[in-house]
Length: 297
Image 1 (cartoon, rainbow, N blue to C red):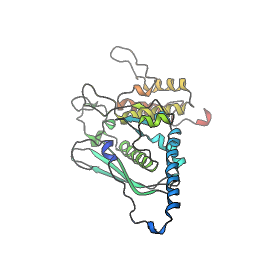
Image 2 (cartoon, rainbow, N blue to C red):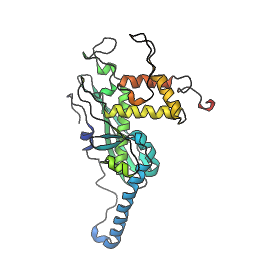
Image 3 (tube, rainbow, N blue to C red):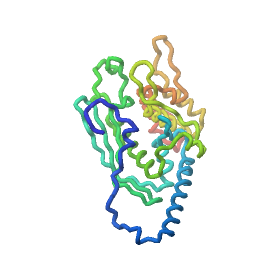
Image 4 (tube, rainbow, N blue to C red):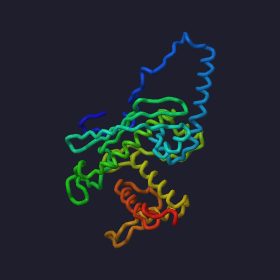
């Protein structure tokens, strides 16, 4: 959906799109030219294989690789990374298009070829994307639509376009992997049958005042941050909690004169600016930051 109105894109809308498949393959066959008995055996064997492959794929993921929304579960970027070797996923060079609107908002639309070496299924093009209208990308904005420094909110000036672009590419990869591996339309029961429980359940944003809930995008970023912190401390839970507190602690005292000590879990971060601040502090951390020589740790 590409238009200039303010309507937010929804996962349900994106999932109804059809892939651009190659309708003129190099070789074709007619039913009259094949042995129906032999072909049926192959077909049934392939169907049986798929019933085994999907649960096996789910088992290599972790609860934080999924988000439950509207009774369905959706694969996240970390889950794609875990399943890619099993399916021999191949992502071609994507085309990234930026679409700008008169109100300053913009979309990034990503499309590109994808395939699976395991099944031999390839799509000429799968489309994904993200929009600056998603409030996850917004800076801290008050009820009057102003950013922290008092300026009127202008998405073209105050939203980091690179963040939206990277999220659009991730969305393309997640949709592509889910389609190739038959991982769409799954429910919590499907995950439970494969031994995966404890998936976070989230809702769409419901208004800007009173009763706003955590969005799927925010939950995904909570999971991403939590995974990164855990990885940087070598998988030690207590160390991860300590690091999380250090990167979410306040820089100075509040109005009451006290300094907020921070959260020990990313799931307690309810605003996108909190997560962005935590990422900045993590990258600059003296012991676990980006510039630390990991060989010395």
